[in-house]
Length: 148
Image (tube, rainbow, N blue to C red; front, top):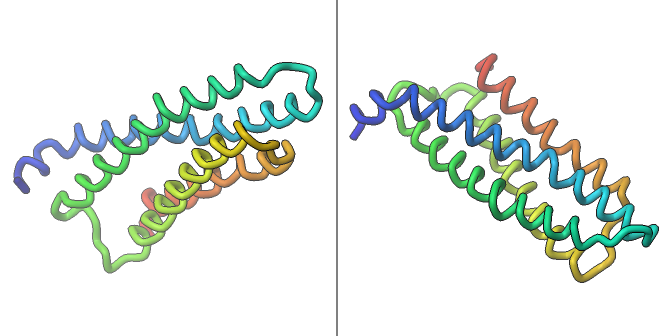
């Protein structure tokens, strides 16, 4: 099993990077959709039904599968011998940021369900929340590349 993981490491790493890119694209875009949804709902100038459909499809068809693929491939990478030195700080920082990113994904999913039945939060609030994945990405990339 360990030899198989070591031999497939470059492919697994490539799949992990592709999964992360897909997940992050959704995490950047869904809060932006929430901004447009909230602003259109507040003015009543445009129907918000199309935003509900876009938010649902983005979350269900792109973000959720990408998150699952990211987690599975990431855990397989962690299990590859000699890759992670848990005595260093960087894997713990990355792990904390990935857990926070997963929490943010859950917040987005819960918020999508909430705004269907209730008044959305103000657009400004969604704009602020849109920065969360960027900050977490910075922490993850610095941890993995710099390995502090």
